[in-house]
Length: 417
Image 1 (cartoon, rainbow, N blue to C red):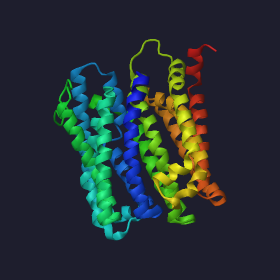
Image 2: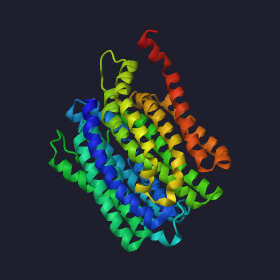
Image 3: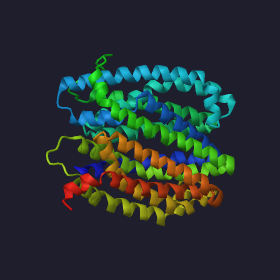
Image 4: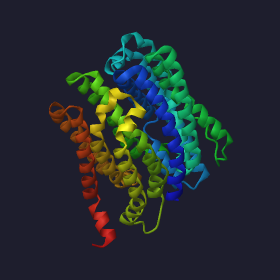
């Protein structure tokens, strides 16, 4: 199953990456590093709003869907999730509409785009519903369907991005980015109308307290993680702009974007295989055995891919961006090291999510972001933006050591030594 997931999602991911390369290149040519930084800030905002509008329940829905064997339980889960999502979307939309000037200032977006920031409020419901539909399909292990829809979303968004960017510059790129949740919602709705689900996806607004209790641990963990990830990214981008300049913030963003492009393959595997697998009620489940099995299949492929990326870092940078971005090639060794440790860490980290070990999860997350921010503040003066990437590598190495320490009793008891 794992090999099948890797094969299909890898092929679809390569096509998505090719589409992303084209739009990324156009952005780099037309907007430069500073424009890339502004777009990344808006992308962070959209991700945060999507997480809060969906109550961060995506992992919980994947897990509950994978473990659910009852049609009535599944219907209650969907109805409750939709009720929560719509309620949260209205509240967050009103907040965005009210605080648009402050948001624009934090995102370093020109005040003349104030009306555009307010428009974000109307797309929030689409963000949450898109995440909900993707989570249900992921829980059903419909990885082909989700991979196909994600490819279509990427292609449509890239086409819109290039067209609007050509005619309207930065504003056009911002509008295209804002349209992505709506495009995704339309594609998922169309797919669900053709899919054979055992229950109706939109079954009405009904609230089941027991279902909320089941989702609460996942909601708390996801909101903590997703909120911190994007808020910290915005903070660090602002720190670079303050201590160095906005151009350097764009270079750091470019390195993160490259990492995101290849790490998307790995994220899909964790969503489609690792989390549902750890969530299933398996008799005599052995974490160490499962972790070894996953890493034996995944890690050689990841290592080979990362070595290839490092060897071809110069042409990759020129292909993705332009000659102005060539200085980021010195960052690759640290970013790739961080992502290699991150893969191993996530195998154990997803076990914390699947088994709802909230205290351990909070400890790891707070440690993770404390190390990243603390070392970044110290190393940015000494090493520039390279210091932030170095801090990221130390962060994930530390997280791996910490999560293994927290799970040591379970690992040792199952291994017998």
